[in-house]
Image (cartoon, rainbow, N blue to C red; front, side):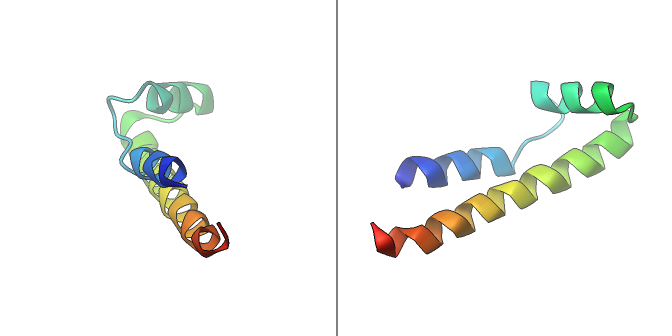
Length: 61
C-alpha cells in the first residue's frame, strides 16, 4: 500500500521535463502551453485519485 501511495504522489507532480509530457503533446498535436495545462491537470488528477483509492483500501488490509 505504501508503494501505491508513493507512486500516486510521484505521478502528481509531473512537469515539462517529463518524457511522458513530450510524448503526450507530440502525439496529440498540442503546443507547449496547451500541453502543459492539459498534462499538469491530468497527472495531478490521477495522483489524487490514486491516493484516494489507496487511502480507501488502507483499512481493508
